[in-house]
Amino acid sequence: MELGNDFKAFLSSIQPGEDEVTAAKAAHEQVRDELKTDSESKDAHEDTFLSGSYARRTAINDINDVDVICILDIDRTITSPEVLLSWVESILSKYYDEVRPQGRSIGAEGKGGVWLDIVPATPVNAADGPLWIPDREVKQWVQTHPKGQIAACNEKNKATNGYFVQAVKLLKAWRDRLPTKSCQLKSYILESLIHKTIGIPSSHAGAVVNVLQGIESSYGAYRGTNIVPAITDPGYPSVVVTKHLPAKEFDDFMIQVKSAAQVARSAFDSKDESSSRKLWRQLFGSQFGQ
Image 1 (spheres, one colour):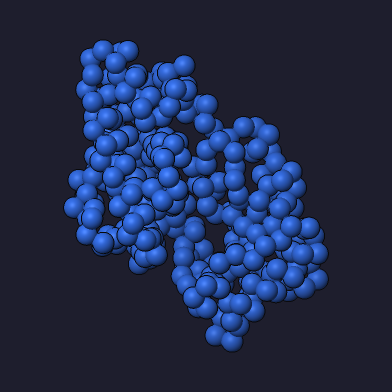
Image 2 (cartoon, helix red, strand yellow):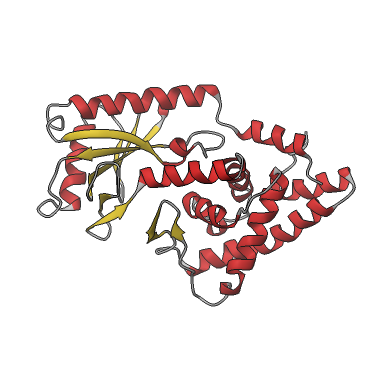
């Protein structure tokens, strides 16, 4: 059964709270203003904008971090990723006690305990197009397209009558309940898979079934082959989001997908409300249907 009211109530229960949203807004506005006005960065600063699940409205529960893209007027051909990231780190250290270098960003604990990921970038061509960002681990500049990701999310959400964003939230909640870290696929890879498999559902339950069965149908054959399929970025198809995903983690995730797809199908097909609810609870926990 579709159990529409149960799904709506469950989605409401996993939405970020008002306090978290308010704290996130205050924190990102503060760091964006600091980067714009700091004596060291203001001349190079061109723009900042939000990225990640917070910007795409696919975050659930606590907002774990807020991604801030900082567009800078720099020449990447003469500036190494390490130099740029170290420079941004030194600027943020003026304002924040907790500052941490990361692979492609600098993390800082902002106002209200909100974790900020500051990603310095420079345009490939136009400021609203793909960006070059520094990757400390591979010591190279790599391309990404955060605004393209946001646009792809919005377009898919419109095409699915709002079910895409809600399906991402539902399947993140399912993912977070999986038994080990190795099978809890990273959020944007999961979101990319949902984008490719959701179809045009007419209910929350149908969206979940479409995605789980779609992932199994499209990628189940890779399980156990030591090969990870090339899943492309919906917002920038030239980028493969699974490029660095270990085969074991993909297999562990796909094992969970196979069983979850069967449960979801049975829950959807069940004609008995109580039996259907019990099956959906296997995926989403006891909070579902309360």
